[in-house]
Amino acid sequence: MTESSIYDRIGGQSAVSAATELFYRKVLADPVVAGYFDDIDMDAQLAKQAAFLTMVLGGPNNYTGRDLRAAHARLAGLDDEHFDHVATHLEATLRELGVGDAEVKEIMGVAGGARDDVLNR
Image (cartoon, rainbow, N blue to C red; front, side, top):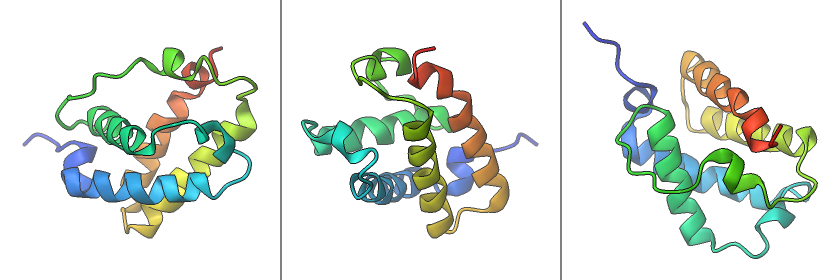
């Protein structure tokens, strides 16, 4: 028997959509990171993030955006504190939506593995 993807285990597209919405509400309410989204079309951002999460969690790959380094390169001053805030919001979102501990750990591992790409180092 093949193990299902994280995407399938958390509930597929509806779960990713719900998580993306809730996650950005948390991010936009956080004064440490909210400023990075001042001039961003949030509808487009939500769609890109949902497609990206779907892909990295093992769902259908419909992501057409830039890679993580290119997407974050223009964000002057982005550092570990910013990354940690965003990661905290992601974990809180997953827990609020009732994602199981094993899946939260797995997703946070994927997110943590992207730190150096996001911070361009």
